[in-house]
Image (cartoon, rainbow, N blue to C red):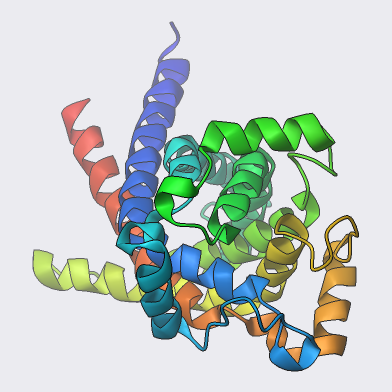
Length: 305
């Protein structure tokens, strides 16, 4: 086998291993906040006709308290199986494709530029979204279920029901694909673009603790900025993939159409529903992923030399 091909496969294997590890660790720690974010995004404001017979959440901690009381403490992990099943390959694909897109967007430069990192992140996010959207559809369906844990259908049962009722297409298991592409593409464009650009500017520390904190800090800001910018796509995605307000009637169909409906009926600020738990998750979650990736990649690089 030619040496350049062998080196490419070695690099790809390390990117897959480090990316998969980063995703698994992040989802296990941060999933409850993702569930809270989805619940907040799914509910309409009282002024827009939110049903009084259903539980209304007045923020992150109110949602956690009411869910734990009504549905059980472990309800905070509803819908975790789809992301656990997909996070390892999802993050592996994201980091692997980011490295490959980075080569494509060099534009003749001898080293990557902020534009290179941003466009590579956008490409990786779009690729990631296409892969994970069916899992997102199932996850949101499970997270929207307000029954106690023992009464919630299994991941497989929900998947089977969606496929039987609506198929695999854009009205079924791939519903909300455009919104997922917008959400993941925008997030990763900012996430990777900011992290790698700033990491190259801020001097490294020789002290391992200070260097760890440097990476965590940059990763936290990267995840926070990406979350703030992309959340309207996330709200549209939750409305499209979640249960419709009136059974049998599809109110939220398209990404930008859903944004317009939410803004018109509930105010522009409603497009930022779930921002607090999203930032609480993807700020530290973004730091966790990038730091775990860097350290696991370095370990594998040393191990397989």
